[in-house]
Image 1: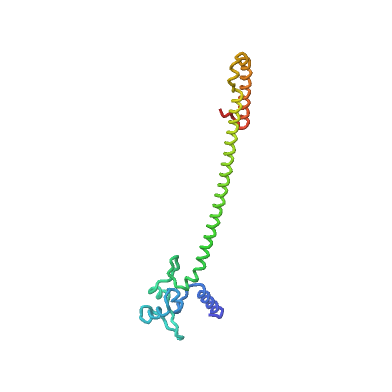
Image 2: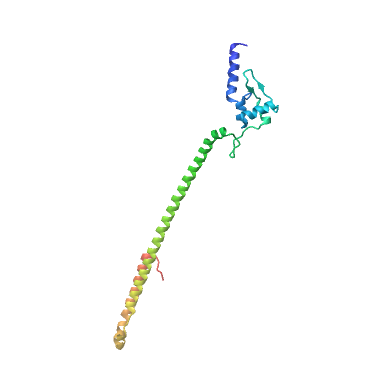
Length: 196
């Protein structure tokens, strides 16, 4: 084996240590991986529930399979079964997602409120226009009634001279017909169709 091969193997092992699950846990890493405390892991080793290798420096090397046989790995969920340290690292990510959802919902509510206000404004405008149109129709109908009464009204003093009233009567009928035709023409021009 050449030095290049040794260097390449070292680089490969170094890469694996950085990017993959470690070949063995230290006591602190085991505590974080399971959500337990260091003394709890150490008591389990001393009690014989879990095997570990004690190095020359006095540190434990714990096989991940052996550790997770006794203590299940920590999974961070919405309810959260992690330690406070792990919860603190996960909280900002979860909060930013919630904040993003909250901002989206606020924008949606604002757009719904704008649409509602626009619809209310349109409804108010159409109701005002309908009221103006109704008022105009009533005014025109009242004017037509007034003109009709003026034409057809004959006071009691004129009944004395029946000769004079019979001579005037054809003219009144012509005037009445002209007023009715004129009113119908006005209604037709204003509303597009006569109302009677």
